[in-house]
Length: 301
Ligand code: G1P
Image (cartoon, rainbow, N blue to C red; front, top):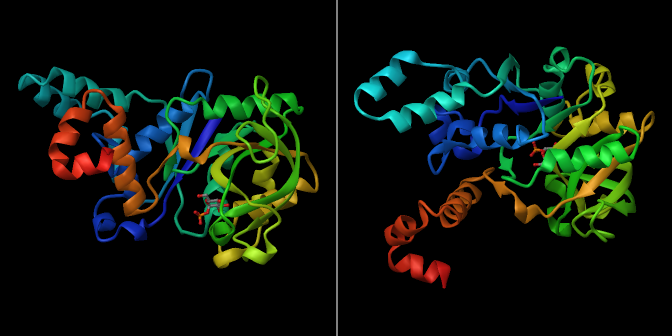
């Protein structure tokens, strides 16, 4: 199975930094954000290939995942073997590229990967969020398998005043992941989806469960996206095509804990993710707290 990672956005929330650096290449510690997302998809028993849907304005992303022998040789000649190995490792990941020429929305971005999925179900991982080491794709595939190969989306509870930022599901809890007793909005609960609405007004939201940006989709969605008109924000919305898919096929939602993932979608969230990753990394935590000085003591206290 393949995973598609849309990465053609303008990164306007991070301007001016993203004038010259794609937001996907902003670092979390010493690795670009998108590498964490790629590695999440490639976790054991996850997908076997990743397709990045890029824009021609951001060739740096493809360069990052391509081998650069001259650069690696230069590093090795300077005694930086370990650094050269880490640089090389990124170029060995099974990543390929397709290009979206116009920013016409998430649905339009996903459609650009239609020829890459070999008519099989596929994952979509949105790039401003990653869930390290929690086998997100495997858990979603388990739910799909238990329901005859149906599409599955990851959802999480959101406060009512924030529903208009997200895609929201309608449905009912029908079970849980094996090994959990979860119900309702608890992590591990499984819902049968009966409706989807992109960025609803709070009074129109059918639930408080939002789509967190992880999808396992039936290939039929590509045919629906090909005829999907613009929706919220005048963009071709993946959520709208999924609503049409629901008329033909079953769809399930797995409730996840939103705090298990790392958000990098805004400068504040990105900074918090850097702090969290530094605190969780034994090779970084001491230097991080020392660099923070007194502020660090307040921070961890
Ligand atoms: C997209 C999806 C939305 C989802 C959100 C998660 O919205 O359209 O359904 O809830 O990602 O981050 P965007 O953030 O691109 O506006």
